Image (cartoon, rainbow, N blue to C red; front, top):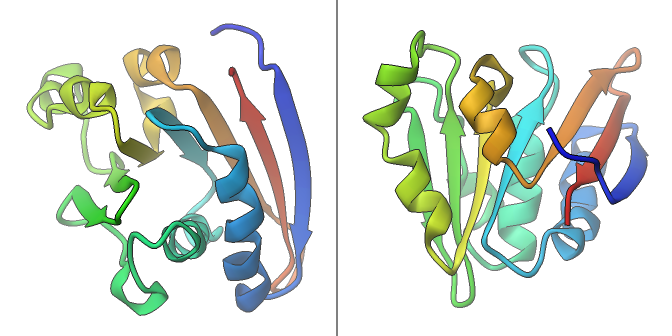
Amino acid sequence: MSEFVKEKRFKTRSESGTLAMGERVSEMLLPVPKMIVLRGDLGAGKTTLVKGIAAALGAAEVEDVTSPTFTLVHEYKGAKVRLVHLDLYRLESERELLTLGLEEMAEEPDVLMFVEWGEKFLSVVERADGEIAIEHAGGDERLFLVRLKR
């Protein structure tokens, strides 16, 4: 994995704080295309962050963004960006990963891709343009570390 050139830390104290933080994070992720690995335990707030980013970029309303745990891929189309949200938790092999068409999606010019559990696959980590790590800090408090390669 190459060196990260941008790094920013955030702390939120509530779900609404995480949603609001999505706007600040979204500014860091433009221009697209970008593939971002979302790291964090179950319930850490990965999907909540994606909700905030999708709303900030006009790709979807907060209430329309849901976890892709069982469908694997959700796609939201805005005027300037197509947000793709993947969850690889249930995948076990590179072969299964290939069937999703991840590489093809990542090359499209208007795509901003968030990959939950992407760290399970070396090919995803190597291809990613950055990562957002989320940690529980007690109660509803969350710590976010945004690291980008470009």
